[in-house]
Image (cartoon, rainbow, N blue to C red; front, side, top):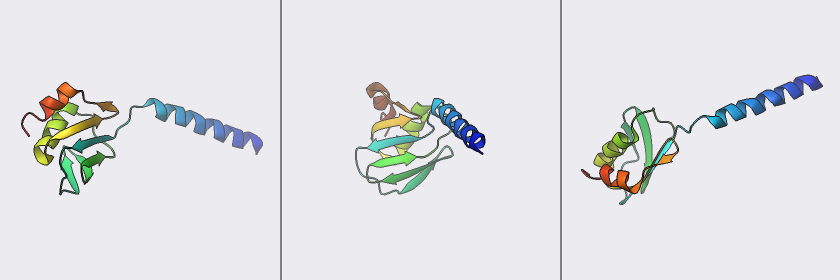
Length: 100
């Protein structure tokens, strides 16, 4: 029984290490002004919004710049944007908001 418990603990530790090595699949953004939308779909990604913050628990591997531009067009000016653990630079945010 003891070896079973130790083996199970080792397997769980290994699974945690593997999942920690994978990139995050979530995304978030902040808006300059509050949105009245509580959710929206963008390229198959479900975004939940509250006030000036929107989050997607899981996003598909698509182009972050294109996603930002689409969301900016639907929600208004984006002040910060993070896609799968990587935040857009100031230059990328300016390009994102160019047509909003």
